[in-house]
Length: 111
Length: 114
Image (cartoon, rainbow over all chains, first blue to last red; front, side, top):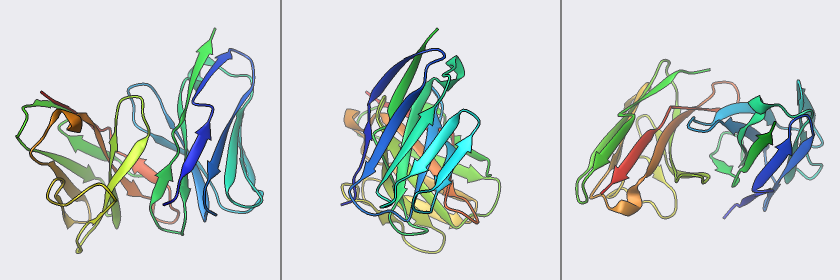
């Protein structure tokens, strides 16, 4: 079955620094989505990428979809304490189908 | 976006009993999903529930253990049957966005089985 892998599993970041989390699918995707889950909360949708090579920005967050539509990345610049949480990527194999979630990257920010 | 509520928010249950979790959405949606999330882990899809049809279960999940109802376009229930401590987890329902395929999650039900 489809597998979605994320690295790193944990990311300890000094406040103000940048970091990147990576997502890789075993199969070509129709789209990839990113979610953020704060400690004790539920996953919240951040963004969806559909096109090959697509890049989208949300303030300090930059999301990229690979040319082969099998991998994605999330880059956060100037990390803040509000960025604490677990970031999940989720791949959709066919449009309108189910999502397969990656293992998540748990981000801890050192002030 | 959709606003989703779940009941109960948490429960402590005895081994061998069953618990029904309710999921209510503030708008009509076609696709609803039920997930399980162990503490500190990722989300595992249990089943997809479409109104008017039988739920579609993922590998490792069966209807006898996790029966699902979807009586209308705004409501669904998931029952965790004959519970064991291994069923202790957070159970989340979600709905798919209308035009695009993003999902909106309920706050979750934290289940502890003793």
